[in-house]
Image 1: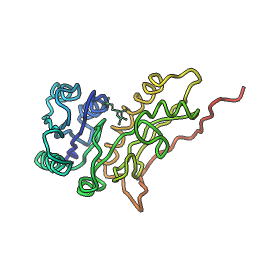
Image 2: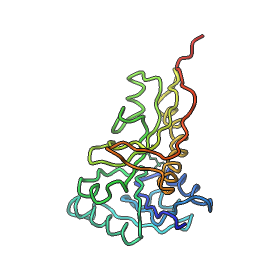
Image 3: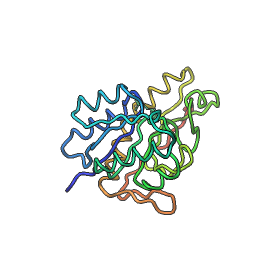
Length: 217
Ligand code: GRF
């Protein structure tokens, strides 16, 4: 079967991009990365893509008079690469309703919290300040509001008593690298449907246990 062509949009380090590159290196993975586009020049993620032989482009938002023109350029580049699914992976520009509408249910994002809790930036600091006992990460379809949209996959991790933001971020990042390829695979296998703004995953297996934090003595 033909592989789903994905385009990955980045702004920086690209560790989630790397997880997708590594997953796609398996011939059995049902998606292929057609292009990687960064709005920031010379970032580590672009080097990761180039090392893997993936075509890259830099589309610097500063080169455009407004958001619409920037997004038109993004849209055109994705179209030229034959992209069928756009994956935001640490892409630090808000996308307007116009762009989101053009890629409706074909545009996904990864966010380092258990949405809808802790949207936005400085998530781990906010989780620690609140005293939440669990955090995690979410892959979701993108809607015009920030960090909003139907949830495809989540992973939960415990928040430990002596965590700082960096330790919590690292624990969550390891899970991000598992769930982003998983979400792309489920979509590429045709198992993901959005029905009434909820995602249904065909033949999904759920974990058989619940988690407590702290555990009883
Ligand atoms: C990740 O934590 C992701 O959840 C968030 O931005 C970060 C990007 O990291 N949206 P990387 O560039 O993939 O390493």
